[in-house]
Amino acid sequence: MYELCSHTSDMADLAWTARPRPAAPQVRIRFTGNKVSIVTDSPRARAALRQLGSVNENEHGDFALSDSLTEREKVRAVVRIDLRLDRQDITSHIDLSIATPAAIPPAPHRLSPAASPFSAVASRKR
Image (cartoon, rainbow, N blue to C red; front, side):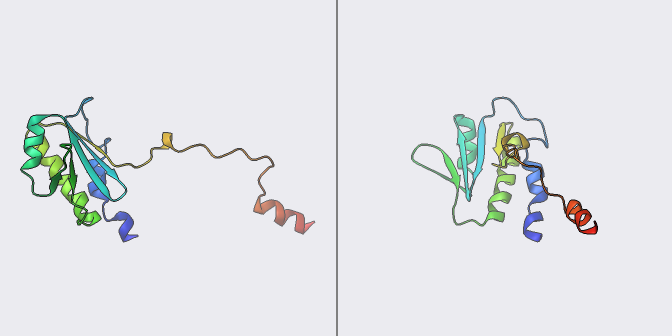
């Protein structure tokens, strides 16, 4: 249970529902599995990201958090990055890669009615 709840406050802060975000953010941060990628086309945002010690820039000019960081360290680093960008009036969007209800496909329809535990008890009493 602890592992499930260990990042709850951070995730609530990072979630898109926690505060309004612009339609066209200057920085996009995405969690994918155990990786965190950071993409921007803004020179000002790129300069701000380069000042951070926790991000690495690749040959394409995109950024990522070090793979050596633990999950907890990555979440905390993203919180710090988001706050620093916000203080510099650089807009960001964070994709937690958590499925929303709209992304979950509906359950398949059953061909026969579902067996109820109450129907089995009722038939034994007769």
